[in-house]
Length: 117
Image (tube, rainbow, N blue to C red; front, side, top):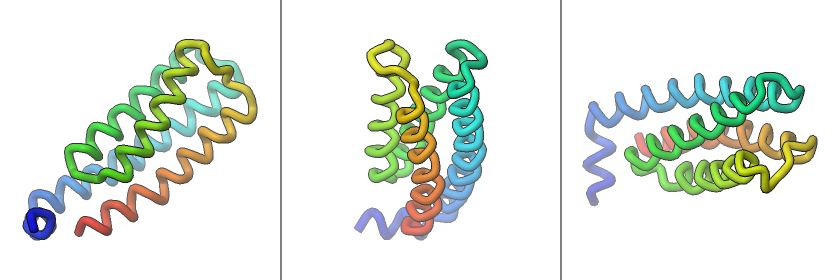
């Protein structure tokens, strides 16, 4: 019942629009950071940026009640944390999986936003 009331709220709709726009920008930055990480450029900054972007996406999705995005970005955040802790190496397979995750988020975000409208 509460979800229906939220969907009718014009302020919530505006928050969803802003969230989608910020995600689009953030996912672009994540993709660029992954390419930098793959090429070995930038030291630890690309990985730190990736983690911050995933964390921000997770938090914003949580505040909007987009649980599927929260779960996915939390799993992504866990992998990125393992990379930061050097428990996992940023080899070609890991980079490819992370790029696929960004692509998945590019599809998931608009679908989640549309489902809440």
